[in-house]
Image (cartoon, rainbow, N blue to C red; front, side):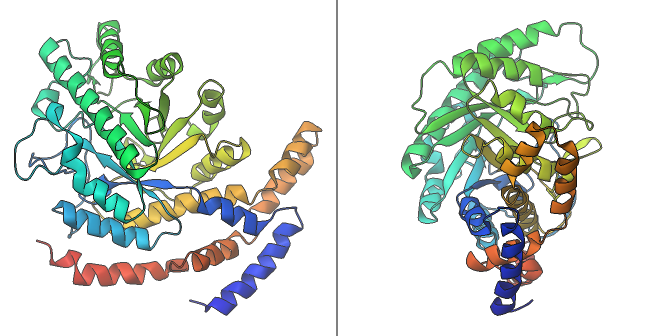
Length: 421
């Protein structure tokens, strides 16, 4: 890769090109450095967790058998540290409840407390990271029926309500300990494989369960509640209780965050077009960024047109302080540390592209009815030297430029992950 002087020289040319359009590249990079992406722990171990269960369920399946997945919390934390050391910026950790550390004791999910996540909190504190949290409403005997919070069995429903309540308390503790609000997200796999007769009943029960979970008011300084929808899943192809319409209504009425997962909609739907609509009625939202391919919703994020459109919409709408960005994919067919790095760096690249747009100039063209100039400029922007700005940003953030990060991952694989059996 070019040395630092070459990178700085090329950047100076790019800086001048963008300046001609009224874009301050230094300011754009400064804004970018303040955006934290929440890295999902479950990419590192194929959504396994530490409960000793046989594996995930509820429509969740990591495919592939690439060697070296994390087997313990310490290994997972080490892998996360390696990934984060190769990603520019300061970011966050997104943790699932099934990653509790219980010293080998069987602790039911409705009995989890913040004490079972002390090591994670201490680790995050040592690394200067914020944390986000998710209840785990799958991979459990009480989820085998396909229904949790919407279950017609009162004992099952009550168990999962208690789990949701426990998770909110854990998330609030994480936020307070780390000095930054924890986004506590609720996603459930509830639904039917084939066409149901009663669509109403499960949704009424889900609403009741959510009301019970959120009954205790928490300090939003430390905890932000979020609910996440899905169109369909494996085993719930015909009917999902927690649909987009259900959770949109619930979030608006109860002032929670709405989680938009980019892999949870119809292949012809795009989240980028939903952001401004839901933000008209909600104060904040959560994004779970993944990549849908046919029926699967969780491929590694790449710098696709839709990822760029999402980032551009966040910047154009001035939503940066109101949108929480997390990643949600799991690929066991490639190096897992590399997957984190590829996905996160692509998300950051997309945001940089959005920050390098002359938004006010484009909006003025549009407001003035000059759609010709708007289209012309949007197309010209695609060939501006964004890559030079990205390389310079990585240089200044003291992480590898270009593909040099892969060398470090290969070394880590040789010395660490390849030795795991």
